[in-house]
Amino acid sequence: MCSSLRRVVLTSSSSAVRVKHDIHSNTPLDDSSWSSLQLCQSLELWYALAKAQAEKAAWEFCTENKIDLVTVLPAFVVGPSLPPDLCSTASDVLALLKGETEQFQWNGRMGYIYIDDVALCHILVYEHEGASGRYLCSSMVIDHDELVSILSAR
Image (cartoon, rainbow, N blue to C red):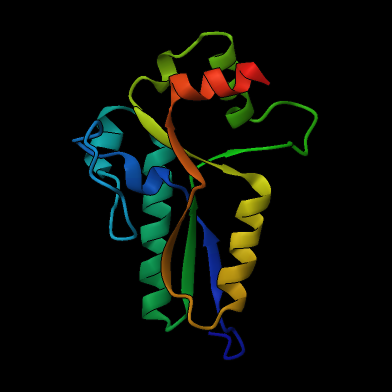
């Protein structure tokens, strides 16, 4: 392995921690939480399954190769989009505004984070020598009905 490699910062997702059997529980999620791979498969939540598996593989690889890994797990990211087409997140928020809430029913309360805050989080965990482990990146946690109310008021 490259001896000059100091740290790797991996972007994971809150999906790697929030898919659990007691999804409607108010039990707080933290950096020790992991999504249930079996539940992701049974509900066909392929994004969450892939994110959890990829992050676990990265932790295993970095541990074996003595690489300093820090992961950032953003919640539902909102903000301007670079491509001209809507990304899946923006499409989902637009669907919420149109009253199409079925895809959010299993989520219950969700965390949301602005894209610039996600970028800042990556910089901070890369530059701070004491940073280690997993960092959940979320600015607020609200029900999707509350989000619709906030967005429609704007």
